[in-house]
Length: 416
Image 1 (cartoon, rainbow, N blue to C red):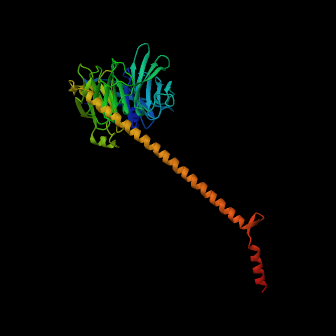
Image 2: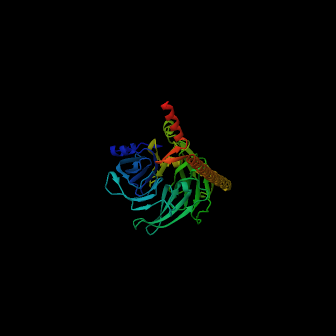
Image 3: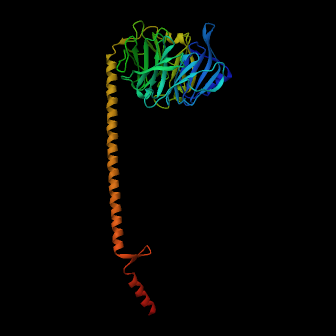
């Protein structure tokens, strides 16, 4: 199932220096492959050729670009707007749109042609994943996972107008708990969201009007910590990367759509134990992160820190789940999500009350300290006044009233 790719020296050097990676994405024309180097603060864009050799998938890589920019801050998600335009979601910043240079190789520092900045008045906050949904009349949508804001925002963009943002809104929020990945099916009907802290994937049907209060129509279980995810070309399979385990999971829906609750139709190990343990810094890490099918559905690319780039035979992966997995009603899972949301809200309320009580206690202690400080100052002043009443001052120096008598006593004693 694993494909040994060919690469020139430049491409291998770029891959070898990626460090921690998060997302990977093929361009629409299948000639470029973008990889997010999280800690390195850069994006690698390799030239790629996907084909067949002797009836088997064949991949060849050539050195491309290493993009840096002042706006790249822990880049986590990538997607192509078109073959020469790349959207990057930065956990430590905003969402940057770059126009990629043509015919340029090596390191390249770019300024974004458009930037969705975080901060006051913005709905973008800690963006971790981005999915481009193509529309009509040169428009497209950016679906953005705002990780620690627990929502998916939607931004309508004009591809022909320097990627100007025409409209922005919160598309999904209900029951989202650290959404870590988002993707849309090629026909645009289905949206899948990796719900990291609830250990599952939520699915939405765009035939229904969606808003912040929309409930998912489907839930995928059987995963430790879901991360990257992609639909097959016909939307009947979904491949999910499990960041908390050395597995990829394959879900299948047949012809009935993604309504209901499903377990994986198949799961397979895609890294050995040594690679997995190398990245096992905590229970949420070690497994695969980013995944993507090429446009021809020939190969599946995967990436993670200690296995920077791997290609799998897409047909063999999809064949692991020839039919849909058993489906159960989704109401139970929605109840579980509701209870989890209530527990989270209660925990936040308890934390807020404790913080408020701590501030009140601190204010009382500060007031008490100021009170004792003032009292000490008054006592010191009182002592100084008492001392002054017991003597007099000559030349700014205090003298005791008995000082002249002492002088007289010692003068008489010396004369004797």
